[in-house]
Structures are given as structure tokens and as C-alpha cells.
Amino acid sequence: MAADATTARSGSRGTIAAPVVVDFLLSGLGFYCLVPVLPTIIGILTRHPDPLLTGTALFAFTFAYKGGSLFCANTLQRLPVRVTTAGGLVVAGAGFLLLHGMTHPVGILASLVLAGLGVSANNISARVLVALTQAESTARNTAFAHIQVAINVAAAVGPLAANLVLGDHPRVLLPVIAGIFVLTAVLMFALVPRGLRPSDSATRRPLGLRVVADMVRDPRVRTVSLLTLVGSVMYGQFFSAFAIHVTHVTDSPAVRGAYYTVNAVVIVAGQVVVTRLTNRALGRGHAPWAVIRVGIAVFGLSFLLLALPGASIALTFLAVGVFATAEMVFSPMVSTAYAQLGGDRPMVEVFNFRQVSATLGESLGGFAGGALFTTLFQHRLGWAYWAGAALLGLATTAAFHRREAAARQ
Image (cartoon, rainbow, N blue to C red; front, side, top):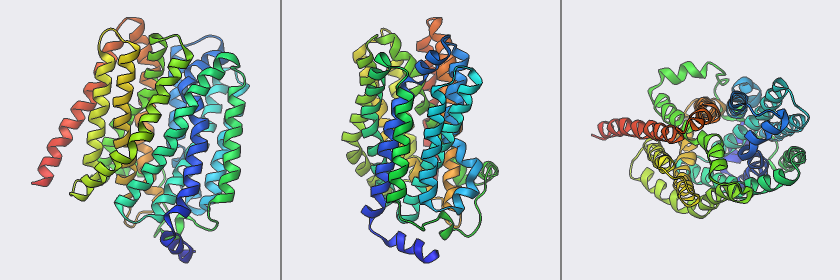
């Protein structure tokens, strides 16, 4: 099996990239048909919108799709990548189909957790495939940027389609999403090279939940993880607080969907240019975590725009464009930073570091956006929420700027 791994690593980039791009393109289409309208779907299922249930459901789903792989790390390490990518997609599809028939809060939460677990297993398996087959940081950053483009092509279509379908046929959306995930599973099982396992290049079994202790002890892992945590809290606002924010900006389903479509189109159009700039920064000796810091600062600027009085459609579109710029820097570089921490660590473990930080960050961000923002907005304090979120990002950026300056002296 070690020979197979070596062959795969030395194989053509296109051979490996093709199934990964297909995976994130199609599963991303299903995913982004759901997340922008998930708060609305929860209200439809229960018939009694509840800010606490909405926040809890967003937290549970985010925790599951970001951190579910922590609970099956050894299984993901042993099984072929072909099996774990396809299997995760099938589990996700089953969860979304079950959600379609749920009305009780417990059933809704359980279905979302099951679906999120499948998404998590698939996502980490696809990223491990890239890390196993690309040796250089710049090559990995480029590959992860290609993933980012594929995700955002899907994200350009998904929210608009979801808002239109939800307006006319709300009960149809979840079965369609489930079907997309199952179709993607069939394609992935056919396209991913057989025999390649994460364990082929590992010297030991990956840590599961114990990665948390290792994240605290290792200063390099701790730095990347803290930045990922803060950036993920900020990224998590886009499908929680922002999704609620736009319902108060416009009543048009088409315009609401267009905010997410514009975000995706900006990323698809600009990712190549941004990747060249970030690769140039890496080539000049900047650490990946230092580039992540730039993305966090730009997230903060987008939130400052949302905090301005007189929220208009045009101003919100401008904030979306700034947010997209931050995402182009932040998302690929996070994966690049963690992949660089490999060494003797199993790749599943390395990306579980990422999952822990992103899970905690996006889950907290989703809960805050679903519960705290709603409460503050009801008291006409929505601007204070966005100002506080911006302050979090800018303060973190300033703290790590001093650390980078000290490290380069």
C-alpha cells in the first residue's frame, strides 16, 4: 500500500484534482441550497419560529459538519479514501431526507447532526486526498484554491435556487438536496482512485479527541488554530446572522439569494488573482498563519459596513464583496497552514486540528448569529452585534501582527 501512496503522490495533478473538484462542486450545490435558508426551513418544519431552536439547530449542524470526523478519525485513517468520500455523502443524503419528515425539535436536531457527520467525513477525506498527493505548500495552496472555486461555483447557484424553490415548493427542497448528495456519492466512488488510504503515509494512528491537548501544547499548532478559530467565528456569520440580516433588508427572495450568488461569483472571478498574491507572500517567507491574519482583518471590515446605519441593498452588496475577498484569502490558506504541520503526523490528524478549530469557531458563530443577533435586532441593536464582531477580528489581527513582527526580527 505504501507503494500505491507513492505512485499517487507522483501522479498527475489533474488526475487527482478532477474527482475532488467534482465532489465539492456537486455536494457544494446541495449544501448551499440548504444553509442560506436553513433558519427559514426550521421555522417551516416547526410552524413556530423560535430563536433559541434556530440557534441551537445551527450550532448542532455546524458542529457536526465541521467536527464529526473527530469521532471517526481512526476509521477514516484505515479505509480507502474512495470509500470514505462516497460513504460520507450517502450518510449526508440520508440525514437531509430524514429532516424532510421531522417536526419535533429533537428529530430536527438528530437529522441535522447525521447529515453534518456525513458532510464532515466527505470533506476531510477529500482534503486528505489533496494533502497526500501534493508535496509543496504553493501546490497545496493552489489545489485548495481550486476547491474554493468549485465550492463557490456551486454557491453561486445554490442560494438563488433554494430561495426560489422555497418560495413556491418548500417541501420539495430537502428531498432534492438528498438526491444531489447520493448522486455525488455514486460519481465519487467511480472517480476516486482505488486503494489509496491515509494510513499509507502515516507512522502512527491519528489522535481523535486528544488532538485538543496537542493543539494546546504545540506552539505552531496553537497559533494556526487560534487564528482559524477567530476566522471561523467570523465566517460563520454569513449563514446565520447575515442570513437573518438580509431578511430585514429586502422582502425579495431573488435579491436575498443574489447576495450569496454575488459572493460566490466574486470568489470564482477573483480567486486566481488572490491565490497568486498569497503564493507570492509565501514565496517571500511569510508564514501561512500570517496570511490568514490578513483574511481575518478583511472579515472585520465587511462587518463594519454592516454596522453602518441605514442598511441598504447596495451597502449590503458592498459588504458581501469585501467578505468574499476575505474568504479568498482565509479559506485556502487555513488548509495550507495545517497541511504544512504534517511531518510525522497522520494527515487525518492534521486536518482534525483544522476541524476542531473550525468546528468550535463556526458553531459559536452560528449560535451567536442565530440567537444573539436575533435578540439584539429585536431591540434595534443589530448594529452593535456587527460592530462587536468586527472588533473581535481587528483586535486579533493586531495581536498577531505584533507576534509576526517579533518573529521576523
